[in-house]
Amino acid sequence: MKKRLLFLCTGNSCRSQMAEGYGKLYLGDKYDVYSAGIEKHGLNPYMVKVMTADNVDVSSHYSKTLQDLGNIDFDVVVTVCGHANETCPMYLKEAKIIHKGFDDPAKFEGSEEENVKVFIKVRDEIKDYIKGELKNLLEEF
Image 1: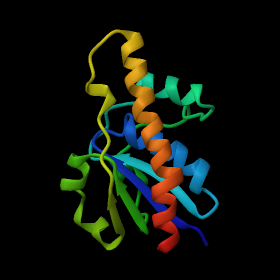
Image 2: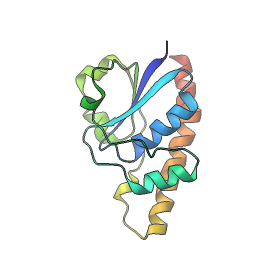
Image 3: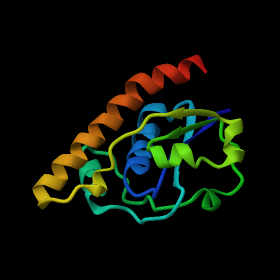
Image 4: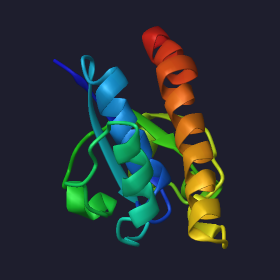
């Protein structure tokens, strides 16, 4: 039986969505992978664009909160921003909590080209973390 892994962020629009996409790709053989936010902010179009450019289809994803996921007992929760780590709901504390913060690319303000570059940078950091450090951590769990 697969374990259940949640990537938690503030708005479930960028970082946790990217993490869910790469989590399914690199960890999906051992984990059912989900993402959620403390709030719903909708999918960020730059996130969808840069994930598609890396051949990870997240177009069917949608922004959700923990309440939208029902009563799933998660084995591992990875918070990908400080706000989610600080406000992680108490009932999730029974899971193994891992915090790895990433810059919020949605807060960057610039031209379309500059925004894409920032999203690619964060995307690549998340991808490298999941297929490297996180994968190794989870093997110990």
